[in-house]
Length: 217
Length: 217
DNA sequence: CGTGTAATTGAGGATGATCAACCAAGGTGG
DNA sequence: CCACCTTGGTTGATCATCCTCAATTACACG
Image (cartoon, rainbow over all chains, first blue to last red; front, top):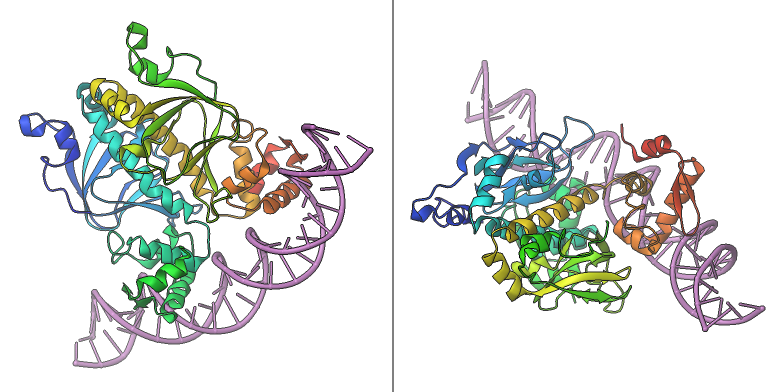
């Protein structure tokens, strides 16, 4: 989750041989916390690469005003909107939850780049698979009790990284539960001494107890 | 879901320029229905490309004997085990649910191929993103009542394609519910006249009613 | 025609969602 | 500096939903 500050060292930039005088097809842009990068259903014509900050992906809600369920977090090093490669529209909405710096490129440019550069597709592939793998365990944890899921999530260390300081309602949605349930689950973990919880922070105090609660053998 | 019969027309073969005398790095193998291709946690040293048949991906179960929850289906045109690119071990288990024909290659060969062939990474990327997109809507349907989820799934036409004839317990696991609940949900959809259900077949009789049940506006 | 497996049906109980009230904290304006 | 309002988090009570366990039925197989 360390920010990417320039093109040398950035996977996209490296794949473009920026260091050797070549040009990266993607250009920087910034979003304020809370801003939408793109919405589900919009024509998919651009692709993003996150360099700094955190973005959450969510499904379209039934009511157009409310947000859907957050199902993934993306930080520095992740691509957004790659579905443009295989679809006409985006499948989910991306919203910045911190101030975000990301590189953008049009689908057309991206495709030209992928065709031109030997290493480009390889680099993108790497990132895409990484994202897939990161999401995958989360899905598995969709079963089990609420307490168990929360414990599992705490053990993954998710809270220390990207989630630190994020609104609880997002965390709850991500874990597939209501904010109230998350609150109760945390309270329950606090009573067995696994964590200490305040309104704005979660501290793991006893990893063993937490592991027990997660039901890992 | 149409089987891929030879290397010309196969994305992998095409990316290897097989038609122009080049060689594809992947070699055919066959599995009987029920066989495991690989298990979660095993050292990730090979990658598969499905040409014919259906494979389900599942998470490791708590008890080593039982299967975990099926969370995805892969048919012809999908890669399996791509996590080898970014991890040492497989994150889930792949089991053939029909007779399966798939091409295999070692991670080493795959990487060499990706580096050598201009179009290779591009082709793999395309497949990986496609899989990601296919999985993504399923996850969204993880909320809503059981009946709603089943209706949604029927409308997606999933049952006509890869799932046709698959054991119900797998379908249930995939939809995030118990076989009993699936059974009840189907019964409930049958009473409102949306579907006709026998022990081994599901027929959509009234698409409108089904859409209603799915809660789509 | 038995036998075993998978699907169904039923009853009971645990879990989480919902609705509502309450509480902490930050920002704003007087 | 303090009342006020707004936002987000917690707690409580109730209820629908789904899981569990058990018994029964359908179907494929030898």
